[in-house]
Amino acid sequence: MTELETMQRAKMYLDKLSQGIDPITGNEVPEGDLLNNVRICRCLHYVSGVLEQVIANGGVVGKREGTPFVIDRRKMAGIRLTQNPVSLTEFTGNIVAGMGDPNMKRPSPKAITGWLTEQGLMELTTDPEGKQRRLPTEAGRRAGLSTAQRTGANGEYTAVYYDANIQRVILDHLEEILEERK
Image 1 (tube, rainbow, N blue to C red):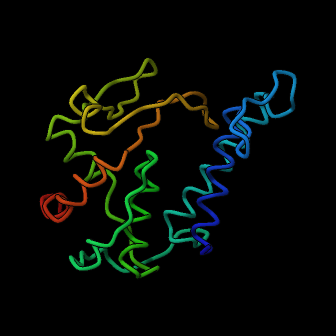
Image 2 (image 1 turned 30 degrees about the vertical axis):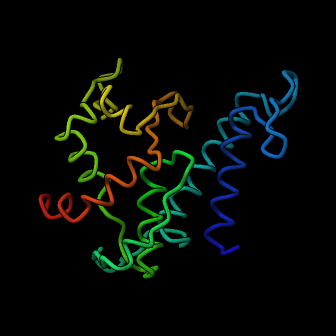
């Protein structure tokens, strides 16, 4: 198992634990267990988010200058799609990993969500606090986007996840997505 795969597995364990699920057995953690403490769950979720950033950064801690993202069509064909839905950060990290250059910057998530919005798969919404977010439309849900409520350091939020079908759509159009947004 590579270092990046180990990080991804650790993140999956943290995500499950932060949701009150034993990552080994898949069973819910008993109600009185320490892992069901709200503060512990928030801490685990926070650490999972930090680990997600490290994964998206190719396993490098901190920001990196990086080389610009360049599409290599031969390598694009070999990018592994994840069967379980993943965040856009994790997906773009997988794209960079598939390109084989650990110093390469990841494709712009803003460009991707902008393109998905233009395609009618996401829409710009305003949450009760007045923050704008892009969330899946009904067509987007049918295409492979899903959401889940999460709790982060700043409270609850709606996370968007991308299954293998929508990952394939994005990869098939990635050159067009990035070209239009230069």
